[in-house]
Length: 383
Image (cartoon, rainbow, N blue to C red):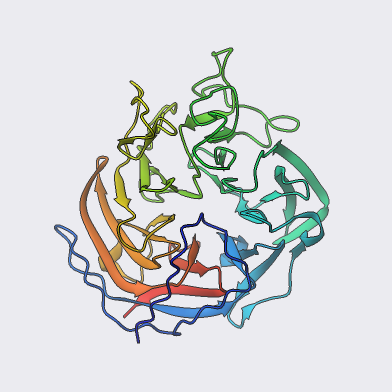
């Protein structure tokens, strides 16, 4: 059974309320038809493994676990019988108006610390840290690493992830409203509209790596790794190559995937708000240092808000290995790209749809889970 769940609203990644319902099958059985050059098609199904209250993000945890964040402020561990009781509950400290809430979670490479990214009751983006002992959070160790005020309730970004270099990367949107009214995307004097790179254990409250690209620029924030982003809702690192991929939500016409190689020194300018994808935005001029997206798509179909995913490195679906898996919040189709040396050499559609796809999760074995805001947690399995 193939289930198509779509929204016709032109929205950002989190504007629908958590009460929206989602209908999906425990195994959606349409084989894939991936038209990827040089690779056989991957035949997959989506297997529902759990239900949650507006799942928003997730991370591979200690001892092979998967930890799932729920937007209202809880974190639960996925087991064979579904989700357990909350291991963390900050619901009294966050708000879900606009695109706010508990938006990102991450473990450091040693699973010694757990990090959450959320907007507090005033709407301020906040990154907090907890120590982890024997696979358990220690609430008494909680500390705030970084905060950033948000002028509006949308485009908060909120994804967090450790890179192959061991540093914590943080994605912030341009601050919201529409059209970047404060010019944050191209302004190196603010953390908004940026991808940041910090060392959370290297100082109090954190340290800036000495090789960050703008540390010698008195007019730029040292924490910035890349800029010119509108709402980098989900980003990831390829577990096989270390390459960086960012799904940046567009304004009204173009959704984009940005890419940087593992050996990049940082400093990429992805163009917003002078550019929307490859296109000048409202008469803007393309910056001389603009790094164009590796992939873009328009909104002539049902897509409205790209949901970035991962390059598949699992062992369950051999024909999917090496392909970037992503989706769109309004369209729900699970799509693929094959990227070689920064060029897309093939595009595909796995033939399954995950509903209003809000996020992907990669477990410790490289298998991928699809989160839908309506509550479904589904694993990509071989057909």
